[in-house]
Length: 90
Image 1 (tube, helix red, strand yellow):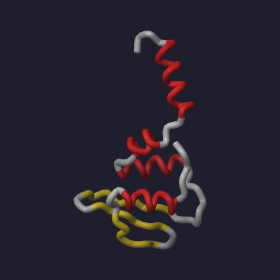
Image 2: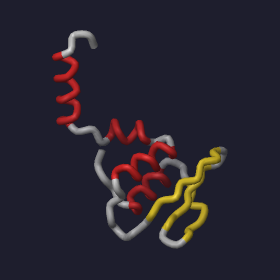
Image 3: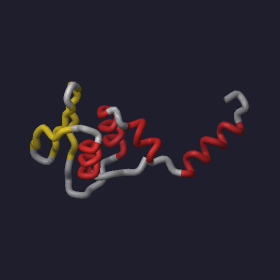
Image 4: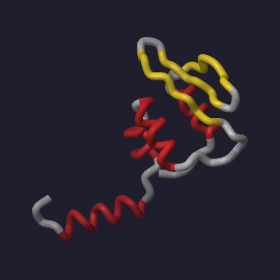
């Protein structure tokens, strides 16, 4: 998974129907109609989010599956294919 900044994540959320509810300090709070989940995105300039926070926020938004498919690299699919070939049980 590629890293992204808080600004980039905020734009990604907005493209996926999340709405900016409020700004509290350097955190932008997003919500979605009909969804009780609130996502707090830290925006610290163009500094990349740490991968664990990014994955957690995307999982809360229900977007983790989509980004994994879009951002997969040829190296990742190649190593998975090699694993499958070496293990005939799969």
